[in-house]
Image: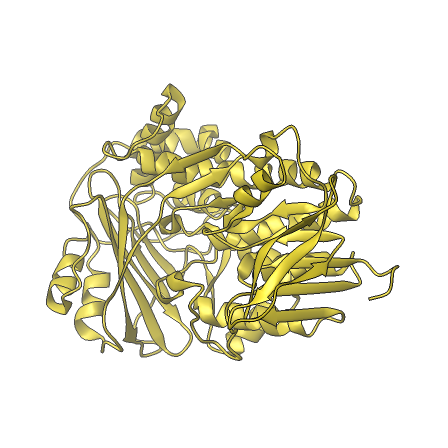
Length: 454
């Protein structure tokens, strides 16, 4: 590396790290991405992403940002079996007692396995000039000159000596189990305050064979809520599979792992389609159980002192309850903001980036943290605002089963395409007040009608 070449080191080759590498490539001559896993060549699960075998969601904003960073990516993964969808037309959403009307919404999502998405991003990032992906290595610490981070120390996972990699910027994308706060304290800086919420959610997942065209939907979701603290989702993904995840919120709501009991658990849902799918489809493997970790938001944006040339991103910055399907989308949106912050210069970058990232995180964190706190047994601070919003959102969700416009607006907010306050617009509020108190057993799906997009 010549003295005048700018070098960025990204610690972690998951969604956040790969998209950060792409966002930084326009501002750096060299990028080194480091991951402790031996990364697979194709679309295969890996040890460092244990949640990959469970259902994932790429929200509309996530798809839009990925297509911006990697033009043509959607067509590429669709050729590999991923399914581009309209979020409202192609998905059965059940938030209350009835499924939302299915119609064109202008919200474009993507049904895809985590393994295929990571594989496509790795291939794109590796093909970028000046990018090196160093797998089988773990970061052990940071290099620091008293003002700025000047690189990272790494060592081979299989054994060997530690060595330094010098850099003009280090990005910590090492995920939920990151050591970033400990490294920060080791350099003499204050750790960021943390907000932590544990909803006690348990996933049990299983793959099933999918016969293309048999069902008229690409995804069916029965969302959990305080009245029914259990739910499930089936997503049509590459490999002609249904990735099915059943979940329960709270210690006594965990789905069973026994196949017969697993099927019976799905019979409790308000909408019968997921149960019917499991009854008729061929299982492709055993059930897999995962106890979801706590959601954690690290408030780096509130620190008064930060080392220069070091930022955290993705789950290292804020890890969400996966049940809300926000994590991948927020990570790629943060990467986009990192690219924009770097273009303004490296001096003062951490403070500038964390301010931008906080604006990305605020709405989804409020939705997921607030949603978790709607369950009475989940511990955490509940303000009057939290209680009011939870009550209002519950009525919005109930109204989605009766009105296509309310459903489209709620999905636009949930997909991070509109700010939450648009749910309080007069036209939406009137419909929520009209329909939001209704409670009934499942009726036939409401006939769809066109929804104004925008």
